[in-house]
Image (tube, rainbow, N blue to C red; front, side, top):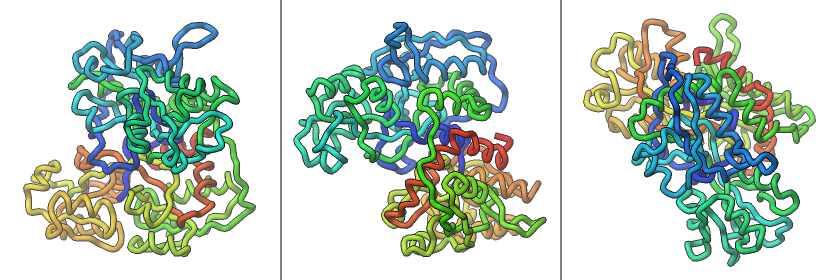
Length: 507
């Protein structure tokens, strides 16, 4: 159903960031199409000053590029890689590399790491290893300014316009998907499609939003991004040779840089702070919460008052937008249909963004990254991982209508799954011995573990890849865009990081 990964708030720090020269998303793919997350070590790595050869393309502003004034390479990738090496005591050696063949060269050991805004995909993961994600990406259409005919995806598809991309990228794949191979011109270096757009050789370029902003800033008044994304969200990660010991060390550094605010500061450096663009005039917002999903939303046992991340985040959002949150306790079952019918203005309940749900309701941009884990009793000796759960005859508890339920059925079959109306009931059933495992998000699982010390525990390995959580709205709600704006502001002013630390301090 819902779960924050170890990268949750670092992703939020860049949730509006687009793809990359070799990175651009496809529409909200199922988790099976994403590479499995890599472990984050619990011991502080120290590489003893080791040289790390880092491949960069130097053609993908603001991630990596040559500064026109100084003729020196610079960008987010340089700053982030240097910050990583400060954490784990290594020496970054940057090597300019062509995008085409970069995965094969890395797999062969030519580079220790690639920092080029690379989208994590299952196909690439068969060749190389990835870090945990450090950004969330989406693809947009870049056109000349002004452009009266190509105003959105549909008008691009309906036209006979040529589309520029870079060879071997997910941008290229998306362009071919949209307009067919005959209308796509692919180039070796990422800035060449933009040059072709400026010269009139192509009429549009498929590009990630933030890299697109970089090119727009370098060519003021000449090109512009169309306002709507043409894909869902995917993750960017650093790339390593298969089995590289560097992967876990870099994962540790990413977590440290997220926690101390460095990643957020780098985001602001290269993409600026979001500005408040909406004033809702004190409008009341009816927000559905379940009050059974700690630490997102639950009833505090000491005060009998509803509390949690959802409450704090929604209040912070309304402070930005000048609205009044009115929280309404709601059952999970039927919550999407009720929202679509206008019973609620918004749902704040750690909801996974899926294509199926998106047919019923609208979603905000993602605010966290999720994955599912297995929760068992603390004295459990036989169920130690996904394989042993599948091989056993254990009953598995879940909540009705959630992606937890879907995953449980996928793992062990419908006959072994007991689904409950309210999210805390499967955990109560686990403690009582009515089920032997619960499929749950990691952070909610931690919440239940904290409430039941010594009784239950999370197994260490996730049973899914990463997915996104978002707020939910009725279809076509004008509130969606306002909430998206507020999330950007709260990301940039550090509020989302502070809320993460409040509820998941150990991360």
